[in-house]
Length: 289
Ligand code: AMP
Image (cartoon, rainbow, N blue to C red):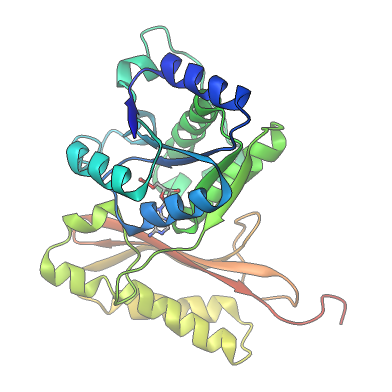
């Protein structure tokens, strides 16, 4: 595995790979690697000949009161994990080379970026969209892999790719979870042992929604309210939002229509740690009946 820190060098390598007709897959991360990231690498290895992992804690997507400074940065451990997972290139750019003094332009990700994570974290998706576009241009990837864990981010990236005619296929990987159902996340290490136990409430709300929709209920608003009660009953849990949305547009949805896909999305603060999770639900039945 080669470690590259200069965007221009990464771009030159990617150009060469393309000339050699290599299919390039990219997995973008902020490091503190866990099973979720590694599942993206495994998927990338199935789909592409060369796998580039990017590792960059992107300052542009953090608000002023967020955890940019304390975000974990175990670089040596990450590099070892990426190497043993079979990553070909680890692109860990210098912040000053990504955002030099004269840097001015950002990507406006449109209306979907104003809801949920976007309203809780103003400017977050502008920062994500900007760095994703930069990393696609630097790595020249044919396919880019993103986790469903960040479902709104994934939907926004798909929208940008379509709207801007980006010549990279966007592929999603399912959410990797701990044995009790908690979605793996670099932020889980912020949780104390008690908080870690209470955090399982998010997955309990998902299981409840799964069971209730499974027995034919379509009253999504009511199911979400029950999920909210489940999450709120965990000590120290403060839900930020928990509701069903249309899976394409992220518009809130109160009632399921046959043949349509929805997503239960949630953000919950456990102590000072903000966790997000989601679950996709396809309402069975014929749209026309
Ligand atoms: P991050 O390092 O948190 O920015 O995440 C980098 C990529 O890994 C994003 O595409 C995330 O959606 C994905 N990811 C993070 N956690 C998980 C998880 N538990 N399961 C699947 N993908 C994940």
